[in-house]
Amino acid sequence: MSCAIGYAIRDENRPILDDPAINAVEITFERSDDPLRIDRYVGGGQFDYVSVHALKLSVASPEPPGRNYLDSLLAIAEENGAASISDHLGFTRDGHHGVEIGHFAPPPFTEAAIDATCRNVDIIQRFFRHRHFYLENIACLFHFEGTMDEAEFLSRVLRKSGCGWLLDVTNVYANGLNFGFSPTEFIKAVLPIPERVQIHLAGGYLDDRSGLYIDSHSQPIPDDVWDLYRMSLELAHDKIDAVFIERDQDFPDENGWRSEVQMARRIADEVELWKRGMVT
Amino acid sequence: MNESQQRDTDYSEQLTRIARSLAAGRDNEVIGDVAAGTDPEYVQMFVDDNVQKRFDKIRHQVEVIEPGFEGLDELLSTYMDQIPLASYDIGASDGDRFLQWLEQNPELSPEQCDLIDCQRARHAVEDLGRKNRLGHIRFQQLWRTVDSLTGELDSDRNLKIHLNPIRVWTRFQTRLLLDDGAVPPADVIFFACTNEVRTAVLESEGKQRVSELELFETGTIDDWRTWRETSDHTASPTREDLIEICRDLAEMGLIAFG
Image 1 (tube, chains in turn red, yellow):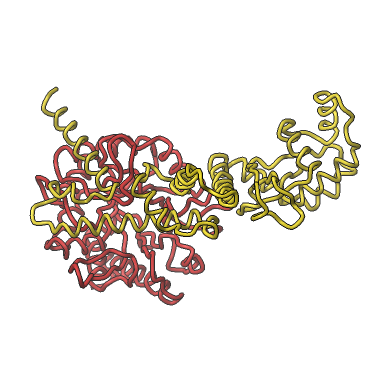
Image 2 (tube, rainbow over the protein chains, first blue to last red):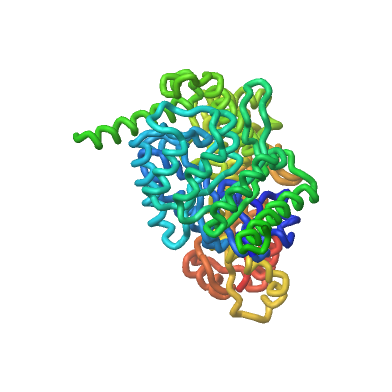
């Protein structure tokens, strides 16, 4: 069997979570905040792998994440049997736990940001102990002035902190288009560093007005992203723990939900056979 | 301060400044921080998207008050201009802050106040559920058996009464949100039932019994009667009367037995 594969849970895909191609789910923490819910967020399904995906740890902030937020993440992880926690390599708030931007922004790619991020990741990893922590590369519309490029910044954070990489293939693809670098080279440069990897797949659109690729999670996964996904599996399939597809808008019909996760499974199985030398 | 400490301090000041500007929608203040060659429009797109998401989220969190507030969208925009999103915004905290902000207007009508109180009570129930998740789940598990256990109240003197821990009282000053027959001002209890928020306007005896149970906590009906006599020094209702009240409260979802 290849790596664990499934969806980030949305109300719209719950009916197909028993698809045989699915043996993993991701809980998007902010969406799981349904305080009067009685049953587990993952429902009655049995999954080989559950991960909690956070949005507000703000790992690149100068100050560590708040204890209440960490406790809330741990509670949902424990209740749902999650093996891992993830969040984004960015910042969402100011340095004094005062105001929130609303969405994560990229930090300046500097030495100071590496130090601050790794200090916070260390605190997070100590807090979650045996649950692995993964940092996701984000899609962004702009970067702040820095002293290195994104690939170097991410590589150094992963190397220094020792945490896992949540490789969002679509975010690499989007940033490659928007900032003019090769997504293939980016993945090849970073993928050897982390010991553990998760993967995100999604689809966005090219905004005619700005000329930017917008990572909207509203469209089918593009062929180029599927190709990058296959390449990533070929390069590092033995350390990829799980693959999650994200969709947040313009939801597909049942066939659409099933076909994408089945495609993700088929590619992973093909790479697995190829790695074992059973397919040339 | 050594070089490393100075670098950390500078970084902290830079990120705090950037975060506060972006949170306030003042994207022009960070143009000097973005990488050379960046189109300022891209920063504005980022800020506008965040503002729209925040607006949509609050709008959803205060939908109860919509019928009573013309120009709600404009009020919300003014609030967002004045009050940035707080860190670790969880649940309906931003929506509730908007309602508190609205409450500062001395010209609100009594009906508008009732709508705000209703929405805030719903938020408060959800917040209690979040803070006391174990208590909520335990009570709802007990309540699943309430139909069968209610029938045993006459014969089983060991059954203990458990009051729903996820409950909030508020008072409506007008008829706007009250059922026919209820007279304002009316005390309304908001409580969790399964995964929903329910409301009830209790008659005076029911209200008194719930208030007693809030002090009494957990015990049998006989314990309750004894406790009443000790604390109030007044004659208790008969056991049969209390059983009847318990049946009504259990049917609503306010108490369970175990």
